Length: 320
Image (cartoon, rainbow, N blue to C red; front, side, top):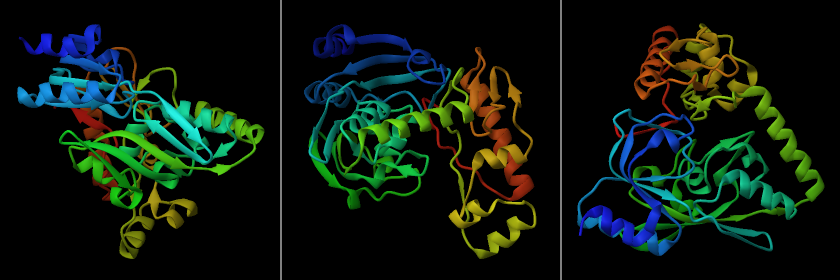
């Protein structure tokens, strides 16, 4: 039996061959995945991974399609789309499948009068991807309310407590392992549903005003820059007039840096640095992954040459 037949036996018509990844990423960029499989249960995920293992195939787990850049050549292996999308709210605890959209969970918990995840209303990805990268915005991060996550490791389910996940800024131990997040549990506080709805609306309005929403984008392209020590404070203050809130946070906004480099609106091919927010690269309609890579290289080179700052990508490269 061929690999395609084995995968079809597991998920039926949710398996496609040579599937354009541009259809599944927020960037709207990416060549074909050799096999694209949507899994809707833990058993389907385990069976698909058995096929992957038996045939020694490369695989990539896809959440919401934000925060990734797929190469123009595509992915020579199996892309596994996480489509387990159930959640349960019991008291102040929320258990969510990895495939649930972070924004949907933010809205559902707020409607239930639970506060702690309202900031996530503007996150474009899934809960699984958010926990993996400790996603955050508006002062909130996934680690803030997380109690534990269940991961699939070598076919076995393992519960990892918050302290096991070694969270950092846009970081967790999951990023450096083969573990696949299956679900996450959060502990929230009681709040007023009316106030929480106002908070959701406020955050969505702020996002609309500050971020480009009308073109393909992976979200923030670079991590904000973390200031390492006092010597660096002195060195940078001689080159940049850095706002006090960034000094106190010991973190410089990548968007602010790109703005200072006068790179807003810079374009290579179909990829353009947004004029609205310097840390967003948008697909103007015809962008290739190569266009984005060249633009990333340009920004990193300018930041290093002019400020001695090494910017690191928040976006994950797939198939490169």
